Image 1 (cartoon, rainbow, N blue to C red):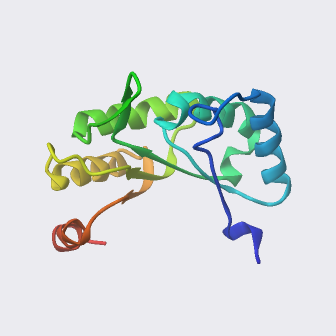
Image 2: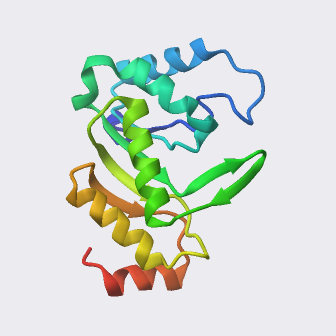
Length: 159
């Protein structure tokens, strides 16, 4: 197995919802993954209420250009409740906040984390395309789509 095909998921990196957590574990995990040749990091502003991003930023240092970083937007916490907001404004704000916390100019991949029933899927995707046009992301994606939603994306956007 080639390690360059592995991705380090960072949902638990900040400890939220996973019990007591020592932040030095995050740094060791990120450093060890890099030493093993893992260059793909998947994250989201939603993960540990942004703490995962902070740990990634502290660890990536001067080798950002050697990493493939994907993130997602459209989910947020309201107390202990998970809420959806995949409006263009929210996705743009999430992306810009992610870039700021990571101290990077771009994301390799930015995805809609989960469709929002109160926002047309086309509006969410169009906002991702705009982020790509602005140079903030290299590629866009969408997670957790059902069959009809996949068909909507295929029919309305060139892939």
